[in-house]
Image 1 (cartoon, chains in turn brown, yellow):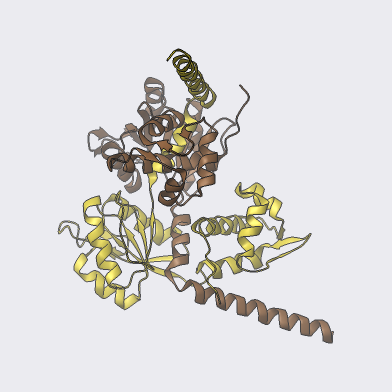
Image 2 (tube, each protein chain N blue to C red; image 1 turned 135 degrees about the vertical axis):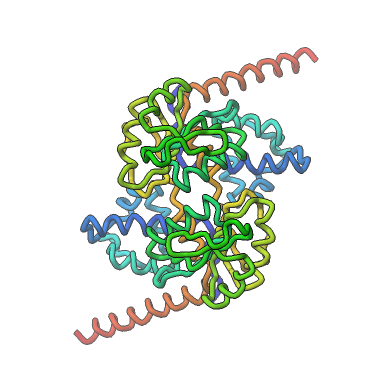
Length: 233
Length: 233
């Protein structure tokens, strides 16, 4: 089979479709059209149909998609049809929050171990897990065949940690450190950057129209100034 | 001026462009084409030109964009040309991590107060801030004219907290609670859902091609079974 070259943005939308399907199924909805999926998700119906068509023909013209069937297909496509074991490296506030969150809230992911290099944090209990020294990470990665790792260490330690886990077989890193990681081909890094979310929210926090009008006015003023200088110079 | 109807997805890309420009400027790059911005961001050059054109004509045909000029425009467009004061509600591990992160790492956002309703957490120090009782939130929102709020409380408390802050003037919420918030028109909620990031990463953690091939095979098997039943029934 030729490589499909499915883009990152398609892959990022799949879990969003999955979440919507979960909600629809809980509400007892059996069939859904791409138009309705569009209303729920904010993506266009065309985009949704195109995204899903990469993976197969899951809908019926006129009737739409069967929610339970499409959900099951999506679980298989994403790789969530079995639980994914993962490790967290960095047991500070964020690492602790993520470990707790995953242990209790996420049915698809299981945090099997948390590591730190700070002797004061080693041995600390996070729910049922005890923070382990980073030196034990290679053994745990091997034992549980870990492919996914969450990194929540400070920026200056992130690359060393990434190198270590990749060396021992990790293929996917969710990086919370504000550092750009370089990894070999075939390894994927997602940077969970809360700054981006926060900044796009700030866009909406003050009067959007007012701000954009001011910008328009500035542009016009500059234009008239520069056309003046053109005609006089 | 007519409303521009700028979509959420455009707004979410703006901070990404901003971050790339920050990096380019640090590297001493003065001009950048939309093609190069495409390489850096992963969005198509066409998409980038279209996004920026909503807000004005910032580039020069052939030469591209001046990095410093475009960065300044983007700061104004997003509303980051002055520091945004914000509050964090929920002082658990995630709230603490976000407060620390924002206090130290984010030049555009300033956490002015952290609130909790748990008496055991009230008074706890997070760097220079002391966790305050939730009852004090309305006063602080008024005093600092807070428009942006981060919610990191448990799911069952999130709606009550949202109602409270919106009632007192908050216009934008970054919600970390795994709960869907309902807010009046004109108030924006972004759900910072780490599950989505993690799930799309899991897609890459196991052999993508192998999994998709298996799915293709299943589909073919189903098809041949159903065409058989069609011809016999």
